[in-house]
Image 1: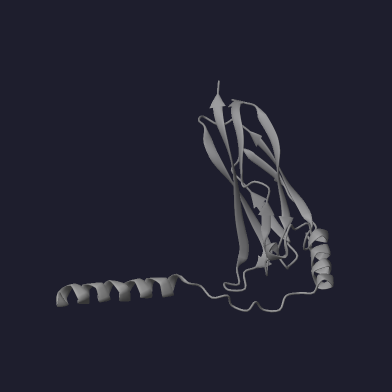
Image 2: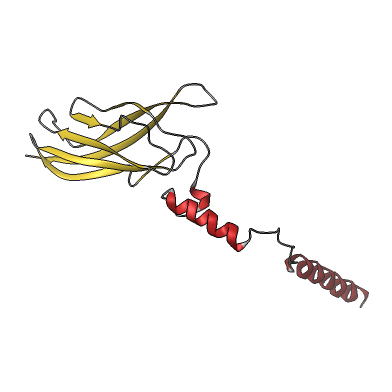
Length: 166
């Protein structure tokens, strides 16, 4: 009888602990922005071409529409033109140093600085004349902007792929 009483008391104690831990209390929320401040913030966000204030990144940041373009089937000797569209979602102006790829790739990039919120385009022409097989090709982007941690030029990479057919 004593043993059953202690077991019952033990389960009651455990149940109380589980219930106490699963009950959440509402914490007071920090003061938010006034509706006028929110409207002003949203307006600035729209002007910058961003969808939310949290999208803005400190430093250099490029947001590409896509970082991998699939050209699909390409005949040997065929040339294809395509674009990488991007937006400067960072807090600094973006300045390009050079954009490069393999010998099969010709690139054209913005020569003027891209300001915060502005859009830019990297034009690419792919020539499959010298290709022997399907592959994924890197397009390397070197910016004049320096990484504050390393002091080196900032580097980004986008890619395109193709299926070579005869």
